[in-house]
Image (cartoon, rainbow, N blue to C red):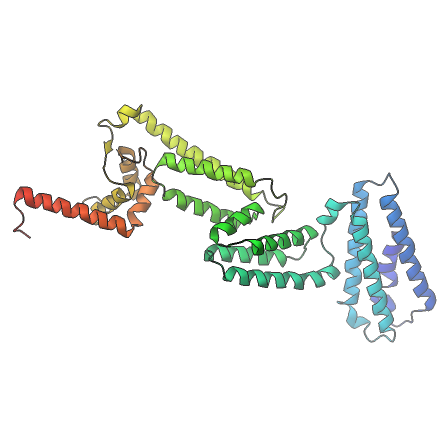
Length: 385
């Protein structure tokens, strides 16, 4: 290996070629060094039993360094030798040396596949790989533009992928992950927001922004579920789904970050514990089912969505003070129940008070008209405005 290092760092370095003539003897000597060093390295990797994995990995790192060095000679330092009378010979030997080193890295890498898979791709290889990745990214962007996908999800995904393929040091693992993910997205029978989220979870797309998106998505979906028990059931279902996903794919986007599935399961576990604590506290107050229907809590014969709208109307018309809204909804959730929901979620009740569907507003109007009719019938108010 020392001769190969000396060849690259000294003998064929551009400063040492300027102003001189490369003789046939020099060229023969350089080619002999490549051949002999190649044989010795293959022998060390595949025939010597005492070579440790660490030694092999160090050699692979040195070969990568040499390839990048000669690549710099070929392109970055080309102005220093482009006017040399043997410019074609210099360019040809640089290319030959790089190809020799690249083939050697690929062959010897089979002896240390895990290390080779996570080793940076050489600068020479990147020149061919980057345009291919950019073309795949452009096709993927067009594919997503034509699909019914939430814009926030689409944007964070494309931004994360673009940053991923444009990073300075790409590995074979990185390119393999990207191409596998792109293939999966193109093979999806119907790509929409939900299917995209499922595929990204399946392929452990552990971008922090995607984790936050998933958390917010679940939080919003839980707010649409009025009952704490129903919320807990939903969490259990989602956790089971994640459990089935985990282990199907062994790779992930960012190897330096924790698995997306692991983080999502931790969130669901914590969320489930919070809901269980809320249920436990309410059960302690209520003690048993019979007590839950006694004077300590009142049943209101409205769905949770209409109950929330009623509270909002009382607030907006000044019958309840418009302050400490969170505490107010917590009070109503703790002290009322509906025929369908024994334990109301305060967060869901507050959300449904502002996110009002037309059908619920229409039914509430019917209740109010019924109340007015009752007043008119019982207190002779028909002739008063």
